[in-house]
Length: 78
Image 1 (cartoon, rainbow, N blue to C red):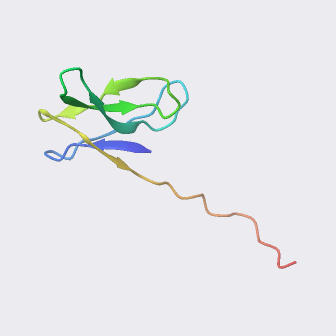
Image 2 (cartoon, rainbow, N blue to C red):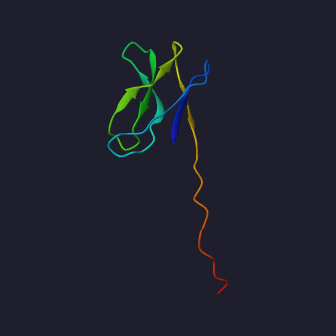
């Protein structure tokens, strides 16, 4: 899951695409004047947004990997 976190206060926001439910990816958009803007984009190409802000700065992206659920059934030795 894509999680944005504020380095100042620690607040976190989870971000996924509403169309495909994929976690948004961090990216940089280079404007015509050469300046850069931090953005979040859908990996499936559904669009991009300005990255979330908190405490006056862009929040940083971290990926949290969720492990598989614990296997419930026995594994056969055969």
